Length: 82
Image (cartoon, rainbow, N blue to C red; front, side):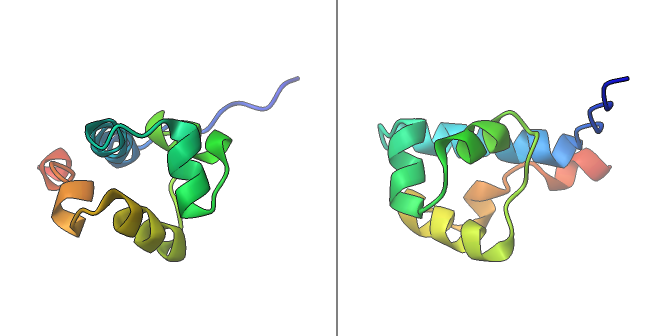
């Protein structure tokens, strides 16, 4: 029997949308963002789909590459808990 996929957290989905929007705003492809951040393109795809969430070191690299603040990267995530 195949393993069931874990339920995606709404915060991860929101983070993924923010990540995709910031990436697109800079005109970067998923592959180019991955290259600049030192991560795989598959991981970028999974994050944008809300299926993965990076550890702190990768978050810092993404923030630097995207030239954004924490507030932009996590915009609207706090609303999901209310």
